[in-house]
Image (cartoon, rainbow, N blue to C red; front, side, top):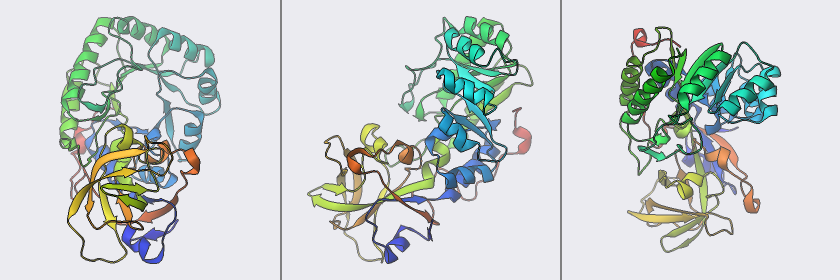
Amino acid sequence: MDRFASAAALLRDHHPQRPVLGLRPHAAGRAARWFRHTFPGTVVYALKANDAPAIVEALAAAGIRQFDVSSVDEIECARRIPGARLSLMTPVNGRETIRRAYFEFGVTTFALDSAAELEKIWQETNGAKDLTLFVRLACANADSLIPLEHKYGAAEREAPDLLVKARRAAARLGVTFHVGSQAMSPAGYATALDGIGRLIRASGVMVDAVNVGGGFPSRYVDAEPPNLAGYMREIRAGFERLAVGEGCALVCEPGRALVAEAESVLVRVEARRGRHLYINDGAFGTLFDAAHSGIVFPARLVRPTAGTQAPPEPFALYGPTCDSIDAMPGPFHLPGCIGEGDYIEIGQIGAYGRVMATRFNGFGRYDEALFADAPMLTAYAEDAEPADASAQLSG
């Protein structure tokens, strides 16, 4: 994979026909170091957000060795990292996945949200005595851009009994929850932790770990979350209010916040019709979230040489497929002089961009390059000081 100072530097020598994924592993490494120094517990990377080898290796080089996986393919991807520890944290899994994860790959950490799933795990591991089981509990997703509350999570009336059953089967018992993707308020974690505390007390069991899941936000044009340090303070305070033992571990599973800044996509304008630009990537490619989740990614006109550009104007984007839902309303503010043959760099697609891309209509093939410049937006100050190591909790 070739390295360039920036997207503009790439265009000085190349005129790519396909979209180009611009990887910035240094951005992933910086985010990982910030989380490891600032989160008061163990950081587990949610591999579903981005499985590019260069990105995963950058996270590992920054000290992340634990991975949340959801399939055998993800297990095989993560286990290439020396010393990787894997957790199957999707609360519903196929029997073969559970069996292969345990017996073939040595995975001993599983999530569940029902008695039926607990029984399935017990059966497919032959009643293993070394399991770490996380019971996923339902919580409200009121403060998240993309709520995730309806699919998974044991309801309040069911949770205490499920915790008791899981305690009997587990060598280590944990609880977990998810406040939703792109959580825009730190208070969501505090509210969830208070609710989890009530359920732990109602069950009367002791838990060995509390996993606050993911949901940590990234910066987008239309979504400016509070400083991430505020999330850490709320989580620390909420955890300290729980009725758990001194050795109880605290865990998080960031995905988006670790890798959003680590990748951009360089696309070509194929046509302009008024304030609509037709480009060679779209909703069936790396821009799924721009079409279906309402995210406005940062965008900039890229030309090989600097020059005078017209004032910015709002544009909507259309992708290359025949489908009319292949549309990204934005608005994306770009120079009014933009036209056919120009290139646009769209940032912050490192989270869920490449992994959501399909081959619909024969599109979805990308070139790749390494870019050495800074991401278009960042939540991490260059000179951010790590938190005092003495503030770390167990885990």
